[in-house]
Length: 294
Image 1 (cartoon, rainbow, N blue to C red):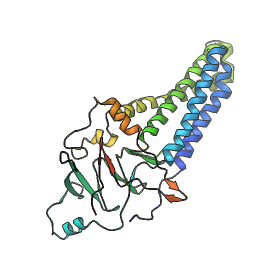
Image 2 (image 1 turned 90 degrees about the vertical axis):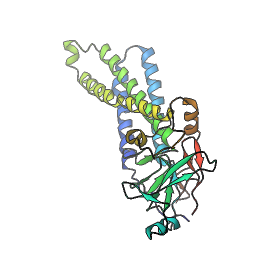
Image 3 (image 1 turned 120 degrees about the vertical axis):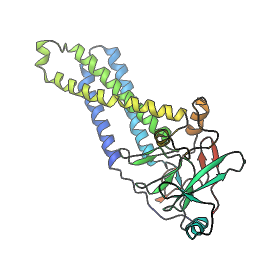
């Protein structure tokens, strides 16, 4: 039985990000590109920027609206945890944060995993799952909560998040290239050019586009994480209990790891005004672990 909870995330972040993207692109089309004299580069940059900015807006909406990978919460405390709190079982232990933990063998009998109990959602979290206090749910393959986009980045929307970063960084690079072409064509080193206010605007925009294009490093880092089947939290923390005790993710199965993430099913956060939860089965690396028994 699920809690009738609502999503707690805010749309303020995505609205601000969308406004920044639209503003940068609009100024690029209105000020930067008209200053390019050569028709060939101007048309190519115009079309490339239109494609990237359009893709960025669409991906922004998808990242915000897609269910990141919620694990369905339960309304009652797990019976095993209740017994442990009364000292009636020795099968559970507590970690450094005081959370109940247990070791479990998957159905194939070959892989052991550690699970932590979430006292808010009343579920056993599989490896790499984590509870987000902002969204209010436990997420499969939790990467991080992105305040700028107003949602968690987890198993089901991580690929769209990476695609969004790539689109934004490429769009910024196209705008920066257009600004360089424009400054070159107005002969910005001459005295006459420094008397034109357009040049100052283009220089400021070029600096803004250069700053935004640095997102490319962030995008490259997340592409690496996807190919290696890692999460940001797992990579930074290096928690031995956060992944398989055997069969750890590796960076040699690039296409297999990429396929496992990019082919994950998509579910929207809301359907007919009600929250939509993910399937009770949870992803653990390249395998699927059945939901723990109640």
